[in-house]
Amino acid sequence: MSVYEALKLALEFATFIIVLLTYIGNNKK
Image 1 (cartoon, one colour):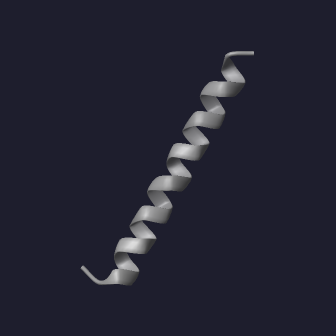
Image 2: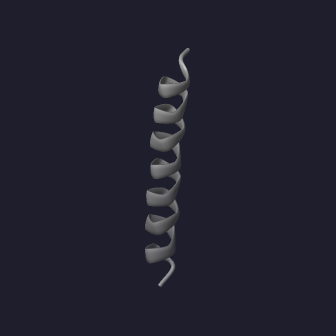
């Protein structure tokens, strides 16, 4: 795995986590 692929994978994972947390946070209201 190249460094670029690793960074891209990490970015996609981080984006998924942020969206998930935002979704959960909005449902708690």
